[in-house]
Every structure is written in structure tokens, then in C-alpha cells.
Image 1 (cartoon, rainbow, N blue to C red):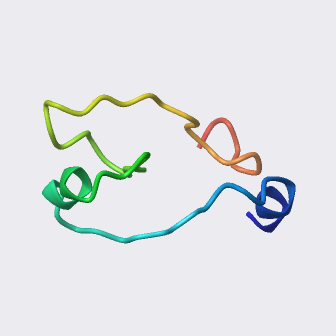
Image 2: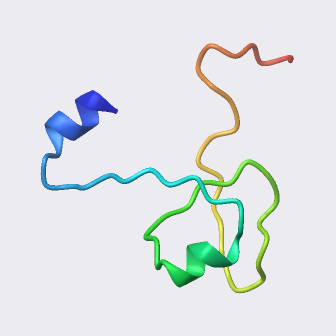
Length: 59
């Protein structure tokens, strides 16, 4: 994250932990990361990655 911030200083990153899905729409976030299924029908999602680089493939 630090490398990204140094490389792109004009991009502002804010981390919020929210347990209520409606807050994501109300606060108008540009991006949200979910650990589970997408909660709302009106939202769309794209899988960015499915494992970390160090995680074994057969786990």
C-alpha cells in the first residue's frame, strides 16, 4: 500500500470497516471489497483475485 501511495500521490485511499451493507450505498464509495456474497441486487461485482501469491494452489 505504501508503494502505491508513493507512486500515485494524487489518489486518496480511505479504509472503512462497515458491517451494514446499506452504508456503502449511502456513503457513495467508489469501491467496496467483500469477503462474502454480494449483499444487494443493485450492486455489481468483479472478482479481482481469489488467493494470495503465497497461498498454495491446492488448498
